[in-house]
Amino acid sequence: MMFSKACEYGIRAAVYIALQSLEGKRVSVAEIADEIDSPVAFTAKTLQQLTRNNIVKSIKGPSGGFEIEKEDMDSVKLSMIVKAIDGDGIYMGCGLGLKECNANQPCPLHDKFADIRSNLRKMLTNTSLYELATGLEVGLTYLKR
Amino acid sequence: MMFSKACEYGIRAAVYIALQSLEGKRVSVAEIADEIDSPVAFTAKTLQQLTRNNIVKSIKGPSGGFEIEKEDMDSVKLSMIVKAIDGDGIYMGCGLGLKECNANQPCPLHDKFADIRSNLRKMLTNTSLYELATGLEVGLTYLKR
DNA sequence: ACAATAAAAGACAATTTTGTCCTATTTAAT
DNA sequence: ATTAAATAGGACAAAATTGTCTTTTATTGT
Ligand code: FES
Ligand code: FES
Image 1: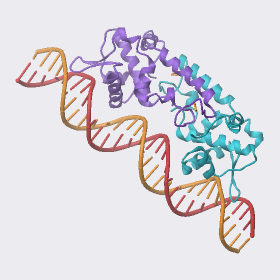
Image 2 (image 1 turned 90 degrees about the horizontal axis):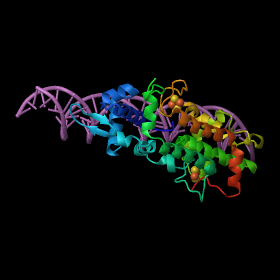
Image 3 (image 1 turned 30 degrees about the horizontal axis):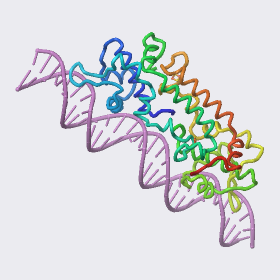
């Protein structure tokens, strides 16, 4: 609803990759898709986008797979994933669908919407993969159900 | 992005209807689509959804059109329009796309997402058509650009 | 009654998003 | 070198969303 399916898969996949990378494990698309309960081939596509944007690292060949360097894990924010997959419509777009959001000629919802949108942006830019992965690690959160 | 196109048109249309109803004027789909810059037939469809949900009133025949009773204008909230058109996914759905949002088995983003979502819900349930229409009335806001 | 007006309804078309499948490329291990 | 394992990439298919068009129904005014 808020994010596209591709973006939802992308976030879940990235969190799972981060989780495994914390333990030094590299993971395949097949494993990822299984663990986050998503369509394999489609997930592979969206992982390509993340790779191209240097959000995750992919290694081809036997014993290859996806990983995220431990150093990067904290600097990779959710906002980067969302932007890579869904673009910046969520951050910039007008809530009522006017061509662009423009405070000088605002739509009737502008003030209230801009406030929500700004909180969302802050939340996304402040939330790192590391943060999300650690909750998973101790079994408090879930990537499928 | 946040709302579907149908929903964006629906909100803009409802605000315009409210605005005209304040002046005792009934408006046709053609006029609405023109004033909010939306595809006529498609807008007509989404207006049907609003009338079925008693959000706007439609009158057939010559001198017919759409209107909103002045008494209703304040009690019709944005949340009702969004729910009628996009359903309650925005209010209930999991941000990462798990089948349902469930605080007992939360996704890694649950806490932060639920907070944003709750603010959005509050904003939508507290914002009335009347409120949005009045800004328009005095020329401070725009429904097209 | 009749003609004109406007929304309702339904069938269809175009586009976007989501999803699948097959081939190519890269790499590791033997 | 050969084989096997893995991602990359492209063509295709299905489904959902967005959009159009035509016909039907209700209502008004003459
Ligand atoms: S103009 Fe609509 S949200 Fe800013
Ligand atoms: S479980 Fe994901 S938002 Fe609540």
